[in-house]
Length: 212
Ligand code: TYD
Image 1 (cartoon, rainbow, N blue to C red):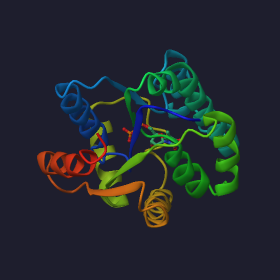
Image 2: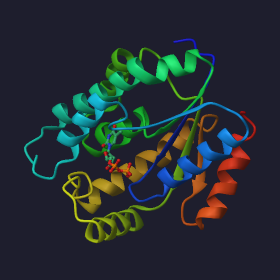
Image 3: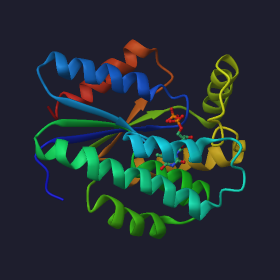
Image 4: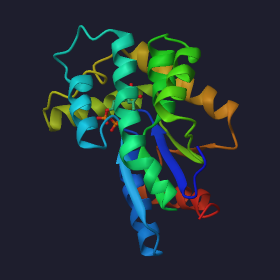
């Protein structure tokens, strides 16, 4: 898919602070006069938000790994078709809080569905659309689970099905993110998620400013 705009994704473990960083980057870019679409997965579009509820509802314990990956890609293809592709065609900057890399590490590796399954689904759902730049906000699996559980205790809600996975699952995800960053160093840039929010914002900007 040929695009005129710039597609930047934020990736990282739950509780890495990537959402805050994405909002800060969006504000900075808008301050420079750029048009920015912010989106998130699973979710983004209204239909995607309905799919998100199924995926994250802690009551849905029977959801099979195959159903899970198809639903993440269903949300994604709706996001690409309804929002992302047209924004990029208009030359805008699109910031996404998670995209296909999340499926690669959580479902491909965490659920052991394998890279080939993710690549095949990506071809259908994203029609070749890949991020030009991915910021991987890096925290370890233990910090991630501790932050996610503290957040869920402070604000009780039912969207905890993924946070409720075992520490072994989250460690696999962590390893998979690092393997991805090692495989694609040109696209995937590591940012230290243990630094304070202002320091992380500076790291993000030092990377992104070369692209805009
Ligand atoms: P969310 O509450 O949005 O968490 P976060 O703020 O950490 O992004 O929940 C999204 C969850 O879904 C998160 O645990 C990661 C998981 N996920 C996948 O397993 N596969 C995917 O393709 C995507 C987009 C997310």
